[in-house]
Image 1 (spheres, rainbow, N blue to C red):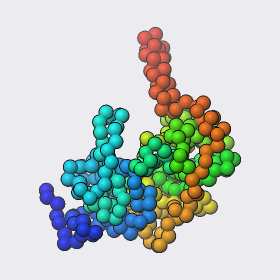
Image 2 (image 1 turned 45 degrees about the vertical axis):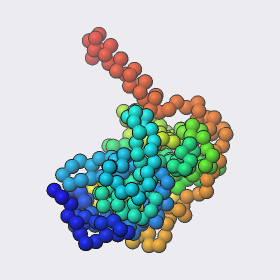
Image 3 (image 1 turned 120 degrees about the horizontal axis):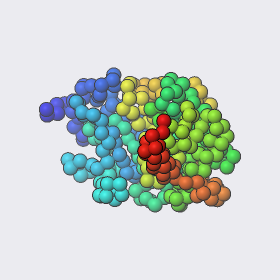
Image 4 (image 1 turned 45 degrees about the horizontal axis):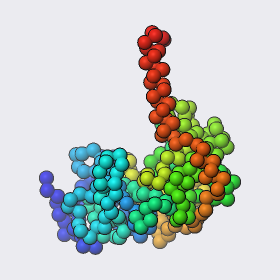
Length: 329
């Protein structure tokens, strides 16, 4: 069915089907999405500008999907960058969401989530920050967020012991993110190593609360301190909506307030009003920081979690097959 055009446009972008439901369970329309992103535009753009962008889109009657490659009908004024994707062995043409017009165009395309790289297109070899993703156990229920906050505080303590500072935001889903800005000359392998070492230090502070175990079965109800969002990864941008019931947004939280909020406190219906003219994320982020040499060295001794999990999975599979052949249990 053809898109229903309206007489409305913003920044030269014609808008369509504004009064259609955004997605099942959203309790919001496409207009609500456009209005919200326009209201917080300058603040979300600060985290998107010059960063290759992946978006989660949702079309009526279809499952949500991740879009990395820009579609053929993308306007020529949308800036793009071509990068080689090792996983799919092909070139991918990523959008760079640098301005209001591009953001409005994405909103009109029903792009709900905005996932940006940890590096800028102008300096692709150097990450601008580390990210620690605190993911509560699936069985935790409503208390999972409280557990994630407790684990984030362990990350904060580990950072403080190193003379580093991080900023906290909700992921907009179940957990929280800690961002640690680093110097723009940081080697990506050193950044990944430092992230692993910080995660390990945080987990050691209270092993009953946090773990770096990549395999879910090994977490035993603890919060996963995910250190795998290294140089090639993306992370949900501050102020981005999420494809969740009620359309929550990833929202900055002061450390002092972390115990008093839950993800559903911040949605596309109220977040712009809560912000007013402020940009608490910009205010919370410290300046770029140098990574201590001993932290980097420590991290290089820690195996990459995905690799460890892959080998462990193969080992367990072999053991199960051998047990089946023996007729055990």
